[in-house]
Structures are given as structure tokens and as C-alpha cells.
Image (cartoon, rainbow, N blue to C red; front, side, top):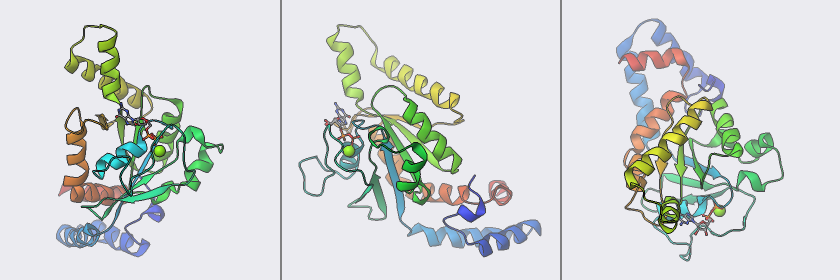
Length: 249
Ligand SMILES: Nc1nc2c(ncn2[C@@H]2O[C@H](COP(=O)(O)OP(=O)(O)O)[C@@H](O)[C@H]2O)c(=O)[nH]1
Ligand SMILES: [Mg+2]
């Protein structure tokens, strides 16, 4: 839980006001105040940081979400070399309130994690997408630790699933696709829980097969539930005592 001073959506005055209303047990007044605030943020921008190791598929993912291919104008540059050491914003064309930030791969920068976190402006994002190409790495764990400390939320994406399945096929290994995918997800889930994440949200995707695996579900979660996501973020930025009353409602 973010401390009140870190809240992106509430001023200290507003938090004090909500706290007082809560303490006085004025449920309906409290709800009205919250609803007003929720309306205010409906039009607010949603800044999503996309992070993970170099080559994981961050830039390709952002392009896919924006309906672009690497060769298209305005697309994020893809490839095997890290092209920039700065975070680069990419607005969604049909959802201009949504901005994806393409972050350089954690492992490619020379600076330690704490410096990466402050240079990339971790506190300014509403939530995070961590993309991993294969195994759960030490860098993934470090990033998760930082996100957790900020009291922010993340989705964990395992990309290039097409490659994984192709490799099994090429090796002549007999496997059941659904079982294989379920096991992969369970494995990631176990690792995330071991890293202290109680309810990890995981998607297995291929950036080249947008109608397969978990890509459709991910897109729906992100873009069709924008208001829900904003509501979650709003709640997460509140002190825990005031959240209790919202949950009660
Ligand atoms: N097969 C496959 N290749 C992918 C996928 N996503 C990205 N790639 C490839 O992986 C390489 C690195 O992708 P890129 O988006 O530049 O990774 P970034 O460094 O994390 O931004 C490129 O050659 C992409 O074409 C995917 O889902 N499946
Ligand atoms: Mg990139």
C-alpha cells in the first residue's frame, strides 16, 4: 500500500477529509466523495510501464497492442540491440488515454537497480507490465521487489510462447498443448508467490499471434476494463483504513 504522501490521485487534504468522514461513520457521504473522485479520474491518463530483460519482446508487444508492426511508421524499434537507454512513451491510437512506456531492458543498463528505478521514474506509472521471454530471472525478481515496495500492481507476461511450442514440436516431443501451457503458468505462478506476490496475474502470449493464447484476454483486461483498472489504482492509492469502508460497500 502506497503511503498517503505517494498517492497520485488524492491530495493530503482530500485524504484527511475522507478519513474524517470514515471515522464519523458517514457511509453515504463517503461514497459520494469517492464516486466524484472516480469520475474525475475516468478521463485521466493511464501510464503503463513495460519492463523486462532486453530481447523479451517489450517493443514488439507495445506495437502489437497499438495494432502496428515493426516496419510501420510510429512503431517502437525492435531488434536484438537495445536502441535507447531512455523510457519512450507510445500512446494508444484508439485509447489516447492509455500510454505505454517502453523501458530499456533492466540488464542492459550499467546502473544498479535503485538507479534504474529512479531514472525510469517508477513512481509515476499507474502500473507495470513485466515481460519475460523464458525463465523467471533475477532481474525480474528485483523489478518485482521494487514495484511491490511502491505498492503498485503488475501483470506478468511470458512472451514468445509460439517459440516454446515450436521447439517442442521440432524436437519431436509429444505434448498436450493445454497441459503444457497450464504447467508453464503454474511454474511462473509458484515463482511469483515465492517472491511474495500473493495473487499474481499472468498471461502467456505470442506477439505474433494476437488471437491465440492469452493475448485476447490480456487486451480485454487492459483496454475494455479501463475504468475498472483505474478504480483499482484509485483504491490502491488510498490509506488502508479508508479502503476498508469501500470494501464494505
Ligand atoms: N517468436 C516470437 N518472437 C518475438 C515475440 N516477441 C518479440 N519477438 C522477437 O524477439 C526479438 C526482440 O523483440 P523486442 O520487441 O525488440 O524486445 P525488447 O528488447 O524487449 O524490446 C525480436 O526479434 C522480435 O521479433 C513473440 O511473441 N514471438
Ligand atoms: Mg525494445
